[in-house]
Amino acid sequence: NAGVTQTPKFQVLKTGQSMTLQCAQDMNHEYMSWYRQDPGMGLRLIHYSVGAGITDQGEVPNGYNVSRSTTEDFPLRLLSAAPSQTSVYFCASSRRNHYEQYFGPGTRLTVT
Amino acid sequence: GNSVTQMEGPVTLSEEAFLTINCTYTATGYPSLFWYVQYPGEGLQLLLKATKADDKGSNKGFEATYRKETTSFHLEKGSVQVSDSAVYFCALSMEYGNKLVFGAGTILRVKS
Image (cartoon, rainbow over the protein chains, first blue to last red):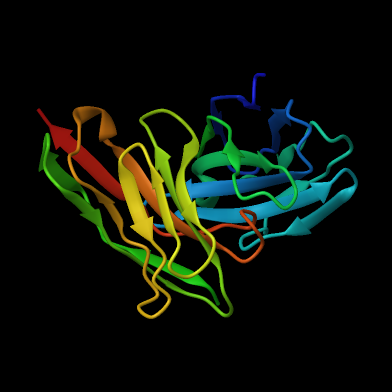
């Protein structure tokens, strides 16, 4: 099992550009989430999905879109990047009604 | 809303010293509580959890007890090693382990 994989590892964008952060898991987990990690603030939930075709907003969803067309994949789209979106992004997955989330290695995004 | 507060770091200890990292929470209802660890350059891993009051979670020599009366979940280890150097996050969830609310994280540095 590869677990949770994320691409790219690093990305630099200019303000106003768009991009998609990729996330995939091979554990057949129903639940997938995106978090952002900022210094002094821990991780905050952006969007989550309880299964294919179902997504919902977390604590900080503005400026981000998600979709879940398959169980395996949960991409995060930045529509028009802003410097405030400079952060480290983590994708996570878990089995429904289980306690452990499995995190990917993260994507470090810088918006200039 | 729900929130988690944990002691600021960095915490610097010598090898074999005793470790305590304080964590308190605010929640409506009865959350599950977690400690996640992040080693340099990696994603988060679940270290231990407790799902109801007075439960003790333990793993790799680390322990934490769910104290409802003080709304606390302090992390302890009797003898730290250099390999324990990492960032430790306290978190809560109202939905098993999903939609986690994280504290800011505490950097632990262990010197040999």
